[in-house]
Image (cartoon, rainbow, N blue to C red; front, side, top):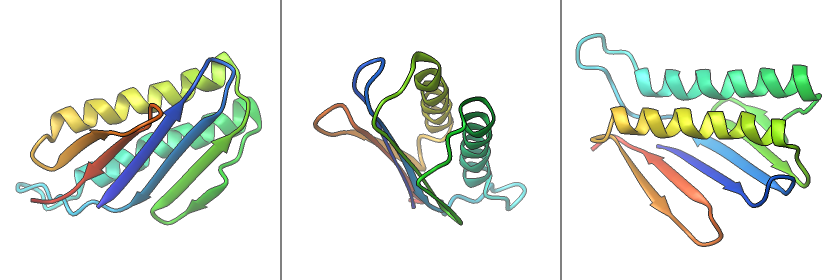
Length: 116
């Protein structure tokens, strides 16, 4: 299961972004784990953009786990995280049988990717 936690407060405020785990999804035609590949591509693009454009490195970056915990951000940094969030929500909409989305207090959203 992949758990994705995203928290934004205000435009220049803190950002928390955490992705951990691997999905159990398997494409019935190809046998590939398309959902996990897509999550990895979204996160890899975010990491590379933040490194190149803003000099930001993740707090955790290892196989199956990435985390940013940023105290103060800018509009451009927030937009990068918002793009990743929107991409992950789109991915969730394309695989509704394998994912669920929960809203928890303080504006955090947790995406749960799982095989039924």
